[in-house]
Length: 486
Image 1 (cartoon, rainbow, N blue to C red):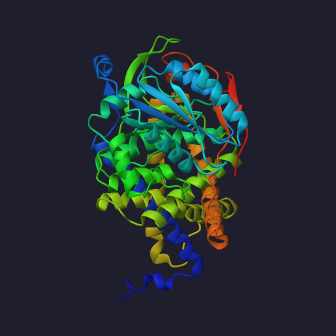
Image 2: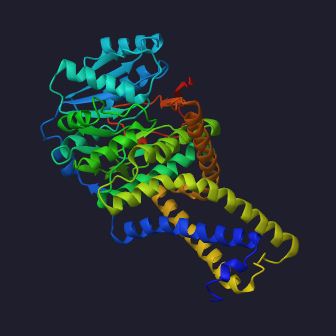
Image 3: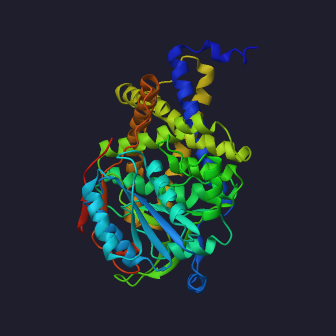
């Protein structure tokens, strides 16, 4: 009976300290589970040899429509699309650039691209912008259905993407087996001093070289990243029928995430295709690993990052629960839905953990004594939980260092611990911003607005572009679009 009532003897302050440490340990332990599944299951990117790469080119090319939604992208769209057209090692595809009738600068830039390249077409939205990315993409899909030119697949990209020259060949081969394919998304290299942009390096590497590979193994639904996602035409038509004329759900700010889970729910064959191969670095002569992945620059300013991440959290955690509940293909599907949404709760946990850490360190430095619980019997468990929490955190940071070093450089990976701390502040601010924006939309009755962030593309586009040819953004020129929409 004494053991049963042990927690009732804690003061409110002791209870706060104990449960902060306990929940933090459980929270990080749940992440370690994925790490261990990946480690012991040997779930990692698939390595291709030269013969397999060459085999891609022998497969008959399916006709692919590359859809790009645009709003005020006149500063970058010509440079980006031109670079990708010159870079992609595939012929049977067309770009379809969705633009708004009231965005004349972008419309004019898109028209210039259309006149310059035979495989670039412009689709003018029937509605003045901005609307949402989902609505614009649906407009392009309607146009493709109307013209009926025999497209066999739909590929989603953004105007700022650097499309890997082998990605369409890879997707073309995988489409023989799958209805839905997502390839990795990585940040373009940035200077080590750019901490805000750097957190995207760490987070996307961990997600796209480990977490999604584990998720793919359990067939737990692969969320679309909004770029680098390709759909079989026949499957897209079935989704359109199910969703009453919409391939992309228009009343969510993460239409891509929703699409991936709907595909899984409908029983389509979905795949996360993470593939790499060896290349020789032209500068050093050393052999390095190249990933077939889409690359882009992410926000480099704190405000822009919070704005973007709050949209992701609102769409995935809040609208995702509202629209999808716990619909899934089984236990693991529901488990990964929890993982998608737990970041929202992490914001509250981080605030509590941060206050606890500050209190703990201040007490130690001023008194030389660790702040133990008043209820002495729980102190051994309390100290062991703190030690376990520390060990698990170090383990998680080290595995992220390792993963980042595989995709970027060891020097980039060395800054992972600092970016880990910094990212917690940005993600926490984003979580509270998401809660505020979502609550405000419910009170006012106004839908959450789809917002874009600053877009930057590298100047150095060339044929057969690989990540080793793209250097840090402070040592090359960039093309920048500084406009933002509401």
